[in-house]
Image (cartoon, rainbow, N blue to C red):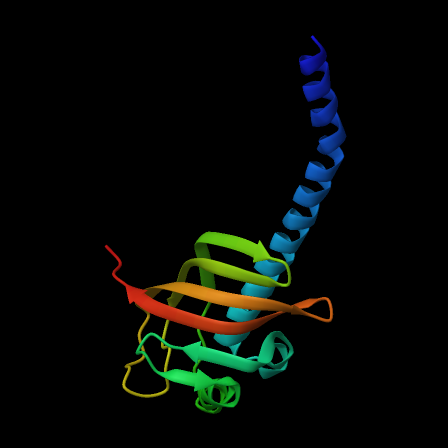
Length: 157
């Protein structure tokens, strides 16, 4: 009987720590999700102010064509879209999975958007596109910033 009591006491003593850790994790995941949605919507609208706020200074972007861009190159690409009035009506997120490792997070998921992704080599279209993405975020001074992004187009059935 002593073993059962000891096991039960251990379980009860550990419970507040488990709940606290889960609450913190849930809070971080909500903030990370909010951040990736803000970045996605800022991309659709070419909102350079928001992107400057949430894109880390050491950012690396690997696009669906396999091109690797640093922060200034990627923001330049967005500025080019803005200069040519290329926007996307909206962006959707599905199958999003967030793993938090201290001040770092890995996010995977699928984006669906309509319209052009680039300013050249792509005709204006109302066709939907889907891509599978991986994002890495880092917590800097209490805010989550995207430090890496990679995406691959996927077929829409």
